[in-house]
Length: 321
Image (cartoon, rainbow, N blue to C red; front, side):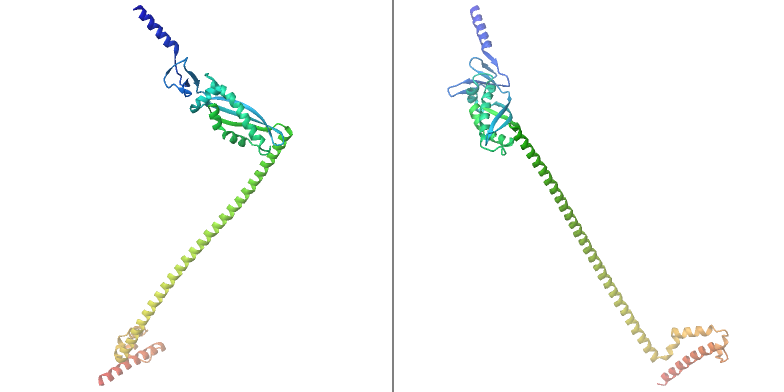
């Protein structure tokens, strides 16, 4: 019984000594017939596995190269790399079977970046070299870096670029300064042109709007004039119709008076003549028809006497017929 307990204790001690707990930031790899495999479990045997950290590794590098004409240039780059899950065999081959394989592979990456940078600078003149151009050139090599070193480029930045010769560097700075001033002046002139175009366009739009408003006002005035003309024409037509009816009425009245003169006594003119005779100073002269009154009374009475006498004679002639 004691032997069994001792054996069990030895087995537990061996397990505790051999197996380790995998941390979340570790990739545990082991050797297989095809290359390198990954242990997915939470525990792993430490003598048959190697933990590789997932932590990104960053470094800076100064690269010196030569442009056409043997003009020396200097680049400073900052790189951040991490282990590539799809190329762990290449990572182990470049960085070794150790936990710091990412950092060791990063050292190999510096050599590759130096070669790629020289490839970029030697094929171009110094005026053609730019930080963006080098960055794009290096980005095109990411697949080669991934497959050769098992590293994934997380970030790549060109921090500075300058010629080694100070005179050339100063000349390039002056040229860049002049280019910036020229671009600034060009932008200012374009801004003025744009402003002038906008002002002219606004004036044209305002003129078109004012013209449209004037046309609308003209149309409204024209419509109002036509409506007033129609109303005036209708009013004139109506007045002409009334006058025509009035004329026909007067013609008919004259015809009746001509046929029946006795009706003259019933006309308003005869009534007004009688009222006028009553307004004389001596009303008795109206009754007696005395010729001794004033000239005004005499004339008025004579007119009325002639009017009545004519009406009586006309009536007599009518009765005789």
